[in-house]
Length: 62
Image 1 (cartoon, one colour):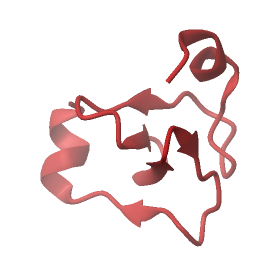
Image 2 (cartoon, helix red, strand yellow; image 1 turned 45 degrees about the horizontal axis):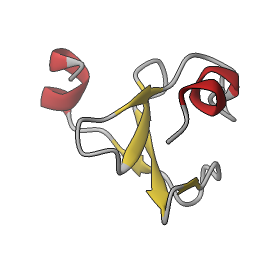
Image 3 (spheres, rainbow, N blue to C red; image 1 turned 60 degrees about the horizontal axis):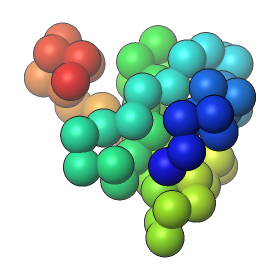
């Protein structure tokens, strides 16, 4: 994913910062504890498509 695009994106729920995970398959918002999928290089910024982070994921903030 392009770094410029990543810098422009914000969490659709809280408008906070998103982090791209190591595998580049999810954008994570640690404030809301949600991970938004990246499919074929396109971020899916829908709360209904996001998964909830586990407690361990929230504590470690990969």
